[in-house]
Amino acid sequence: MPTLPKRSRIYQNHHFDSTRWDYFESRDDDIIVATSYKAGTTWTQAIVAHLLFPDGNFPAAPAEMSPWLDMRIMPLEVILNRLKTQTHRRFIKTHLPLDGMFYNEKIKYLYIARDARDVFMSLWNHYKGMKDEFFTLMNMLPGRAGDELPRPPDDIHTFWQNWITRGSFEWETDGWPYWSHLSNVQSWWNFRYLPNIQLFHYNDMLENTEREVRRMAAFLEIDVPENAWVDIIKAVSFAEMKRQGELYAPGGGHFWKGGAQTFLHKGTNGRWRDVLSDKEMSLYEAACDRALTPECREWLGNGGTI
Image (cartoon, rainbow, N blue to C red; front, side, top):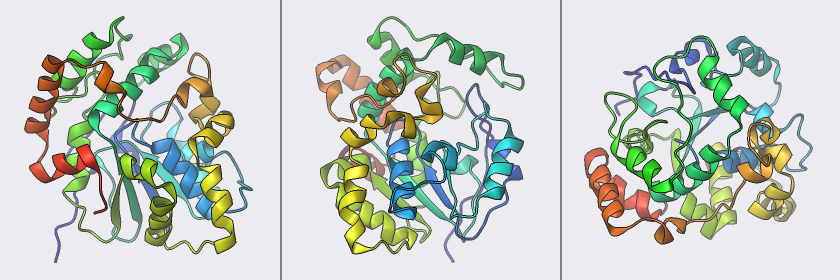
């Protein structure tokens, strides 16, 4: 009998509250889309939406259909009531590590990972593009646990130093002022053998989108008409998603300067190579040594089907 995940930690900060899952009533065919952040969440939500609705005729925007349940901004009762009224197969977003997450053997979990350095570059764009009202909302909303979300520093190197060497929770050693990307990946990696948890890597999704989307469909047991595949793969390409950014970005991109075009920035990997110095790379190596097992570290850096 395999060991099953258990919620052993509570994650509460300016962005999320893991205890909101205590009130979630699951259905046996539910899908959870999970990442740490900036690792393909919005992309995967779009993919699942197109798999469920291959004609592209969504009942609502994917971000509205697939709410981020642990996020504090939207009142919990609003999200739960919206999910309760959905008649289609539901897919819900989380950024929680598996040790803080609701687990049910009957529902399926899609976990998407990405090299920490690529996550960092995307997070930097995301962080410095936030409007003032977003910081006000995060920090002034009643019920916040822990410190405020600070404004981003002027310099990307200052942000890297903090993000890769400081934890926001006492059991984490990187990720400040958000949460640990590395520990998040490791928590899901530990249960990759379970039949209802499937790990995907951003590198593989970029390299051969159709192959990975077909893998997702097979894992989710969604039977897609063969003649729909060409349109689905085109619809979930970065260029097409950016063109329809307001449809896919959370809140239509309202909280970012430049809107959805800022939120859906580049979608590429490797930009860190021109930014991080050898000394800064040594901080990355040390962070990986602290948080990851060798096998997980190898996969996180390179990808590959598990």
